[in-house]
Amino acid sequence: MTAGAFAGMAILGYTTKTDLTKFGSLLYMVFIGMFIAGIVNIFMKSDSMGFIIACLGVFVFTGLTAYSMQQLKGVAESPDYSEEQRNKLALIGGLQLYILFINLFLSLLRIFGSRN
Image (cartoon, rainbow, N blue to C red; front, side, top):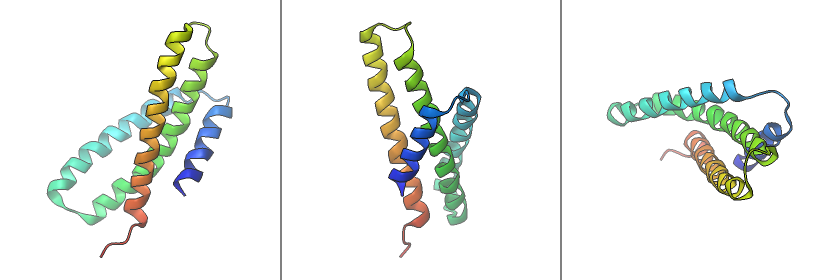
């Protein structure tokens, strides 16, 4: 399920002509809010708040996947970077996509995982 959502959003981010820059900055703000809410939830230990954070995480991480893929495409097609800079940015972008995939997986696991 994670791989399908990740692949779908990566393809969407690569093929869309719409600029996702404003969308990406909004998603990063929501991510910061989720992070703060997660820290608060460590002390509150609320299952419902954890579920809401996990649901928000699915939307945020899938959206950030499309945004990051579009940014990587822009780096690959830009003549402003040297080959060495392009390789370094591709490595950082690949790591960023990997982290997004892992976070998407963890969010889905929190939603669908069994609670014994």
